[in-house]
Length: 523
Ligand SMILES: Nc1ncnc2c1ncn2[C@@H]1O[C@H](COP(=O)(O)OP(=O)(O)OP(=O)(O)O)[C@@H](O)[C@H]1O
Ligand SMILES: [Zn+2]
Image (cartoon, rainbow, N blue to C red):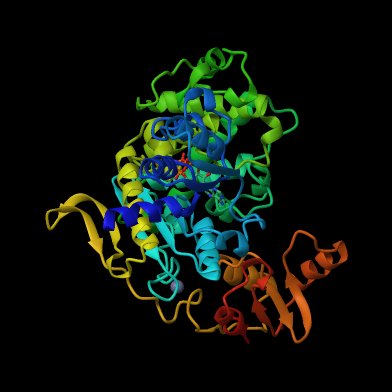
């Protein structure tokens, strides 16, 4: 009897879930309610307040606790007799190796990043375990099934790169609010609060023409005898006033564009006004410091005026120096860092105002800055259901009926869920096919570092590459390397004229034989 067989396949199955976030919580619940009895779940995160609106296994009292463990406990309350094994860990840890993966009948991904997805894909290929992969953004979602040799693997098709903008649009000619956000976040915020040694295009325009008395590197440093109010105003005037004037001096740029308007702090905020606001101090922990709180701005969905944005800008900068001084120099923008979001929102709005671009609320700016498409709980639930449907087909080896399913925002051919037959493996996929990758590299010019970082790690996604020249090792990655080897490898990275063979050694992935024999990179 088909139904009986299905049920016993479900009961016998040992499944691994990776990710206990938006999709993962729904998936764990649906697995349990569908009769699965042996579920292992890996998630490296702890619960945040922002998860509670859609990750229904979690409650306020769980904030700060392991997602995997709390998810397990929540599901055991309504299915007390099943076995759920949680791992509060990164799936990339070496204990989750090929042998670990081989213990499962199917692996189900509910992840949110390319790196972890690639990693799980490769482990599933190496262990020859079916993978059901998924993802959602807002109303959109998809579920795909990957079986080694039968359907394409997760990496058979190149993934679209995240959207980037031309540097000059960001530094000189923004035309959309998102350009102002990128400027505020990746240039101004990074310059003031991030790693000082990182390249930064913020001042390209002004430093081109900067007069020699003002050394452009020092403009952003707080001077010895300068109080923080004055420093804030100087930065404000430099980036929203002076830099815009410099940009305007290049007539060519503005022939077919609207000219921006330089904005100086004294025109927007008379000196006295900031003093009044700036002095309102509230005692709170460094992490909770907020310019909105100290300026009594309550609603994050309000669009602030230029004056309000200018106040937030100066107040946020002041608070960073006053309350978060130890973070300065190490910060990268984080959408969950309230003060950082306030600063970036205000800076982006002041720049938008200068360029005649409509201003936005903090809520909207945060969404754009964090590349956030607001998650839709229903999409996650639908996708989780589809994952379970495909997982059951996998367990029953129902080879002819696997489907990739897309969840659409608007009906297409009257369907909101669009099933498509899975594609065959891509014969030239460097991950799952026999094809060796050949690359042409100019070994006279390229440093080994460029090769390792731009190609081996970024493009090919190798985590533990081993690079050989003849019989000697030029470079490898590992936790237990001797110090002197680390120094030698570091020196090798700066060298040019290498002639090498690269592979990801099998101690970690134990690549299936084909990969191991053929998928080296030859030069
Ligand atoms: N390498 C990894 N190892 C283990 N778990 C991972 C790894 N990478 C991502 N995850 C987990 O995958 C889950 C993805 O869930 P989701 O997309 O809902 O993101 P979130 O972090 O919960 O929410 P958001 O980012 O939208 O605020 C997260 O719980 C995250 O911890
Ligand atoms: Zn592939």
